[in-house]
Figure 1 (cartoon, rainbow, N blue to C red):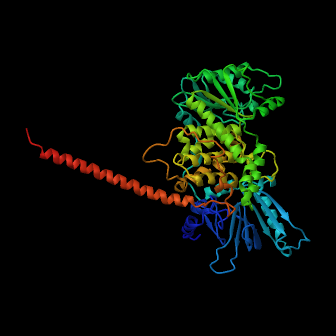
Figure 2: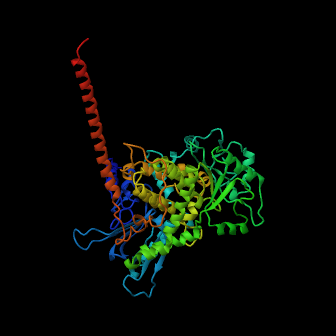
Figure 3: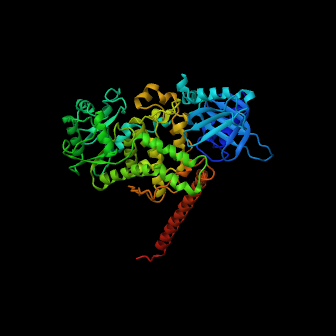
Length: 619
């Protein structure tokens, strides 16, 4: 191998465009600028191949039917990671149209037109994406190019439906061979270290590894924090009275008041209103661990009608007659099916065309912002109970892995400034979403072609949207910027990293993802400067301790930087992270100037004191 090749590859990797979705319109977080790493592979295509990325098909006579620019003729490349289209400019100096889409973003692929199709660009393929856009490519019938493109897209976008493996595994294997080391994102979250940060163990709480083999609850983490009064045998009995054995365990503790947030699933009371003495005693242990209050608040994320209806399925909620020490609140957050339909309407309103006169009405009719308001308002209620009233809170929905994760993670973000740092936010996602069993595989549909699966839902996306809404109200409270959040959403779908693969911690351990895939946090933390918020007070004073955002629909707004980025008529500028770099550089310069001035003032003061002493009369 040419010894100079690696240097060329490094240069190409450093200078390639950061846009891996559609550089002709919007910037995104999925590009090869940092994705190719130090060993990006330079080939006869205008993008840098990632480690493990291999060609699957190439066609030089394809037309991209763009809803905004019209049809453009060019070349299409399909790899095991992406679909890449580049137009052939008709005039000199005309910038090419580029579409660069990770295959994990694709929800379904359909053929359009048949042998009898005669209209221009009526024969080809339509691609429906998870990131709020559709793509259409026209083929010439006589070239028979559509068939192989369709087959390659199916096999590589949905490898799990064709006995294949997700790209994350090939990427990590090649990454290791190429010696692409660096900081390990899998080390971001260490459960016992995070518990110690919260002050556990202490007189009232202990850590337990009762679930180390995932035998007590297969969707919970290996390490729990539980009341010290509860023995492991007692915990096993309590688990039997909770849906999916997801008994209440600690999420967060106020180090000053000992008020806690614990999470679980619904109790199995059923229509007959069954009681369980162990479960009732266990909740009293949680209440007694907080000496500041003689009540325990239960925040049930569901509408009350849904909670009552769950009794018919053997579930339900804690009756205040049976649980004497609790007060129950229903937060009116709807289920995964309602949220999926709401997001579908958002896509219809934003892409491909909009009617300005009906824009606001169309967004209102999606009910998306109403749902965001309910989640955010629920988190604010939890914050008020824990911070203002020093009352411990138990949070659950039905199974405790969707709405529960939204509420615990968001309330912890509002209560604890640590989670508003880059590292802390990564820990928050690892802890409240990944380790506690949010079903990412089922909710996102990684690598399978079951696009109409009823288990798919934008639960995690709603959480990220809520974080963005809070960041708009508290612009200097977060160490990270909007580009950081969009990067997380993009790689939620991309299947390039192992972070969001599988449904549970147990599955990730069985798949050995820590050794067989790369963490998203490795990627992000290796190029932190583009994700930092220059307004974050890292120099003068600390951020606000507790945030209480306004959850009114009048205050919330649609996140155009995410949902509308493919529509040129609606999108907000997406080059903010470049401006962030400039501001951070300027901030560093100002810090240096301040330090230099302080040093001069100190030296001048010392000099004046010396002069004064020398000029003083001797006695």
